[in-house]
Length: 471
Image 1 (cartoon, rainbow, N blue to C red):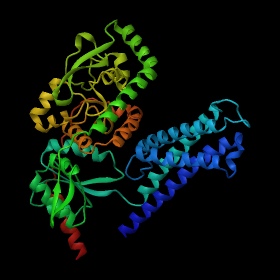
Image 2: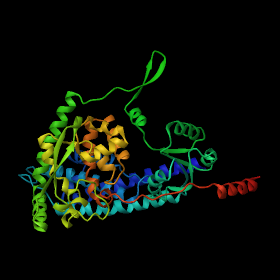
Image 3: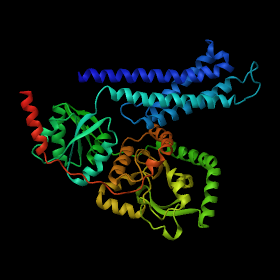
Image 4: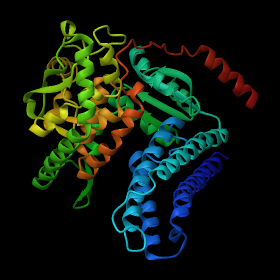
């Protein structure tokens, strides 16, 4: 029965995805076809325009995560689908304008009917919103949330993982919480559909993963260094012996050239496009307290080299102490709150990229004080200095300001181990989603909740009653 529901879910998602894409396609070509009737005729230009929309749309939806019903909340789906669709619209509309530059239509290039493009985008976003919320509603109506148990080592660890799980109440229902060394742990695993292992020692974690695999339970567990290494490794056979091969990685000469050229192009174009925004920011900062506009701070980059990062000043000058921002931090100015919320304070780092101190995509440049502190707790933190610090990256996109140093480290190492030029371009495009999720991604450090482990007595009594009923 459970497998039939899973198949039904996949079928529903596929049908909805196909219908949504068809609706977006129909809106674009249906509205632009009013002024361009040749779009309704079978011709080479029609084919090229439609293929552009389909191929680019599928590619960008893949980059942004697509119609991830069942695995993402509705709002992130709307953001990713809307961004992908709007970019597809802009490119296809530009191509449409170019194709209309001919003797029959326009004797020179004209960016045609931008008001229709705006109408198309508005209608498409409305359709995306409807399909995102409807899709998740249908998906989660087919089956109740998975019964989950959380296996961990401490109350602090539970406080790190349980609030994250509870953000997805339609997917997971935390039914039991237990320590990894509790003698009842295997019984707890058997009573649940999904098992979360968090901060469990490696030996015990491997034993529990083997048991979950044997009993066909869904498993989630946090990354350790060994897991990051395995991501960058590959399977090989030495004669007839199966081995895992890991080779140390560094950028090839071709990758370095392409990465530097990308840095130069992005920083030059970025500075040109954002210069009006930066001018407004500079004036606003100056008007508020007449202090300095830019703030310079020593940061670390590749191989531990120290450089000065440029940012718009978001704190009061007399209170700019070198420590991470906390919740309701009174050091932040009124203008600073806005700049930090939308990450605008980091725009001057385009100058660092142009100078070669930073790259567009890479681990976030940390304060010297933080590096010393984090490396003391996590010696592996030094591994992220194998590459140049970046303006954006996997940790900056997937994480938040208050994401734990260990989780940021894992994301940075995952980026390093799986490096490719394509991944860089993908992360550059995904950076736009950060602005749409500004309130979440810029959340400051706050207090962690503490959770206690189940004592098991009430659970065992229920289990005995259920057993008697079964008998």
